[in-house]
Image 1 (tube, one colour):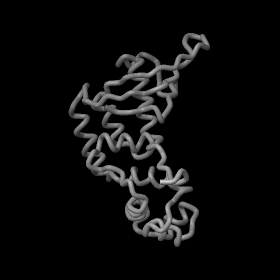
Image 2 (tube, one colour):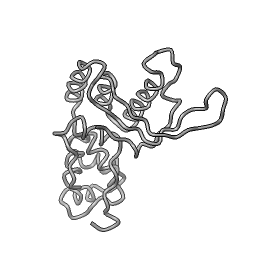
Image 3 (cartoon, rainbow, N blue to C red):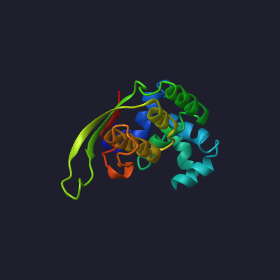
Length: 187
């Protein structure tokens, strides 16, 4: 691959889907990604997909037959291909399975470069890696997430729960933390 065709780093949603749904890997070929997005998100309508991407329908045809690569739209196409890999029914089934595991889901996460809040009026901010053992409910929320924003919100909520130490009276919320979405992984 040339430098202009370099594959972008997968987003949080794609990494979550690859971990929680290992049989539903995002296709690596652009032609397959375009095909899945066209069929599953746009109902097979090339014109609708082209309008959404701001390109001519002929460009989408070229992505599908492999004569062109979506250089400008590669990241978005890869992100949408990851989003359409799982159906709402499949996400719900996996979420129920994770919820049944209770307090320990078996899913661990590392949230890198988490920036904490101002502590008791102090403007000292600390950045560090946070290692989480997700509960069944938290892992189920990740399974149900459909896009990057929902995954990010679920992870932020898990970080807040970590700092609250399971107590609903801890006072920390998901908005109290910021983290680097590129420095996040599940184990």
